[in-house]
Length: 251
Image (tube, rainbow, N blue to C red; front, side, top):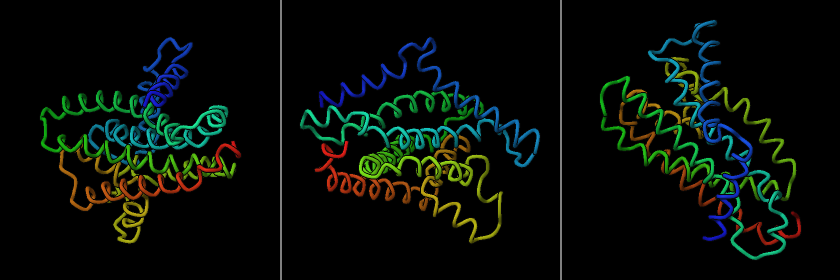
């Protein structure tokens, strides 16, 4: 536990070292992306028309940024801490877990501000907000499971990181960040693919329903986010445990 705390503190210090704005960058970056995509899709192309479209965008962006940044940074985390792995015996899961924890801290800051803004604009505090901690916890568990898998796979196979970087870009545009799936297409097959074969989509949908729409997500969505989180975490942990024995050799 002590080592985990030290790793988290070290990651936080490294992120903010030499930065005047510090954690504010993690608020500014989503806002800049939101403004760019709102101008492109909402003003120039006028592809999507939602009330308070910038908030619609932001609820999807914050989920995606947390997810994608965790995976990309976790991919190289074991290699970055190679000297520590070779010198000491400790639960190696703590390294990618520390990466996810640091991202979770900044994600919660942005999410808290977003929740305040959306509630203020709607003017009501809806019962769906009670599910927000559950959705966040499931998203964190889901992301941690994939981060463990990506970290240990990249330590053995150095192509995993570049492949991940290539996959994340189309994955981003196929996720319901700029649109709701139902408004994009009426084709049932396409709806199924976009909603259920993309494992990030239900987390974005659940977050948007709670924050933006002020609704309780459907039972199917809630069941997916819980089951996917459990499967990803258990599967990622099992893979990590199976491969970690040779980590000291490959890093």
